[in-house]
Length: 316
Image (cartoon, rainbow, N blue to C red; front, side, top):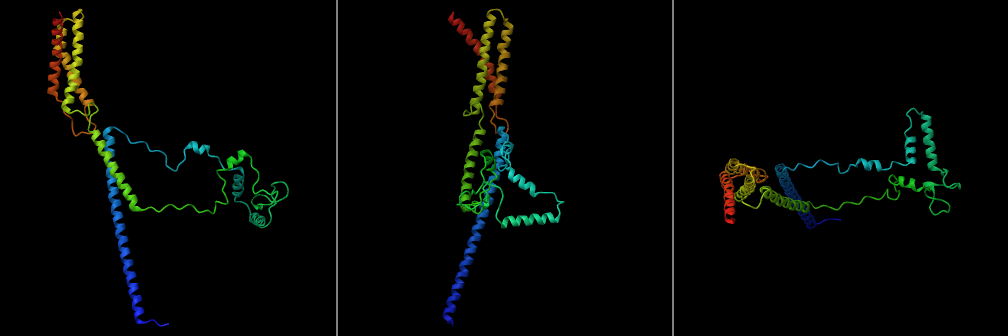
């Protein structure tokens, strides 16, 4: 059969087109793989940075890392203790198979010969007691022949974990579904975006103090110093009542009103702001407004005493 020049040229053009299509497909596949590798590298760097940031947040908020748990595939000691061992038949078979190494060649040859003879001939092992074959050598469908011997319920329960089904031995495992790397990378990117959003929320929460988190630092300081001054004012009223019954003299009352209780209120507010008014993540020390606190405490306590005197005189 002869081929004309036109047919040869058409075949050459077809081969050239297929070669170009293959080269284009290979170039596109190579570009896709490069893009996937670049996306994986970027996502890896992003997740690494997120891990470092989360570690910083945990250390700043005083949260320790959780202890490392057991491996996913390892069994716990209780499960290992509860798992039943092999049945006595398999143990005896393994024990007989692992005999001493001093057995002579004649014993090994006789064992091999007996094994081949038993495999080739009919099995005469005691089973059902009627002289028929038993075990795996029995043919299904024959009367009086059982495929497997009767086993009590307890022994059957112990033998279940190590039993192997002959029918399922040749069944292949189910293949896993094909995974699209582009879809998986997109899901990982969305999860990374969600992690970034939650990380930003955690940073915002970590930048707020535990005491009055929605208030400004100035309003928080005023409220704390005023509260400590009010508590000192209550103590002043208690001292005034004690002075009225003769438990406290006038000099002691004046010293506590003018210097003692205002100083206690001022240092109490200072310590409260330092303990509960400081955010978990803050650069430096937050302001505590010491002059303002000193003024509030040293004015509020004497003013409480003056208000008490005016109230007493007004009631009289």
